[in-house]
Length: 59
Image 1 (cartoon, rainbow, N blue to C red):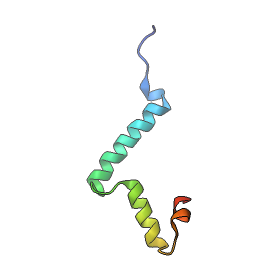
Image 2 (spheres, helix red, strand yellow; image 1 turned 180 degrees about the vertical axis):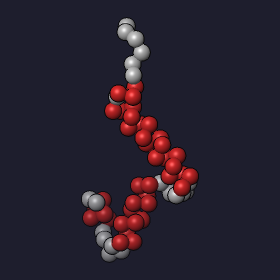
Image 3 (cartoon, rainbow, N blue to C red; image 1 turned 120 degrees about the horizontal axis):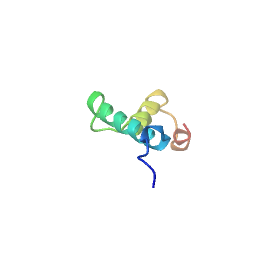
Image 4 (tube, rainbow, N blue to C red; image 1 turned 90 degrees about the vertical axis):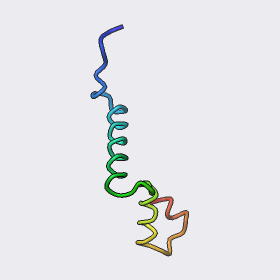
């Protein structure tokens, strides 16, 4: 087996690190009670209150 793998060159690892940082910042700056996907849905509903569930899921 070779030497240690540089995880900072692997997209999957970097994506996970980004997601962890996003979650930490979201909780500190926005809300610990609502997730960013939940916020996106509420925000879309505020912009278009008449939107139906199917159309909402496509956006």
